[in-house]
Length: 102
Image (cartoon, rainbow, N blue to C red):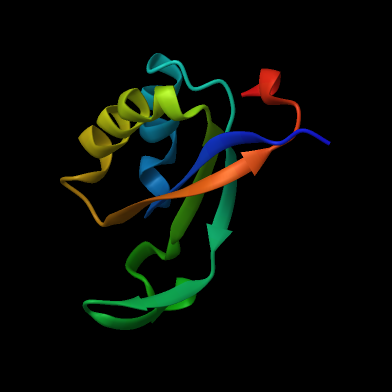
């Protein structure tokens, strides 16, 4: 089977900002993403859990698979939402089947 290069972008952000982020991604031409709840983790401020957060709204992970040439537009849209808040953006190389879907 033929594989095609892609980028996997993972954006972990506070749950109340989810719709702001997905709106920005849509305006940047991103046609698909998956949103998953984040149960907990550890970072600069130490360990945390969803239950231990103020308001308990928690964090979400928004994952996109895109063609490499669309990466810059996605990152510009994402960082505009993430930068003033708590969040992490990571990019990894990926390969996909059915490249026409991305």
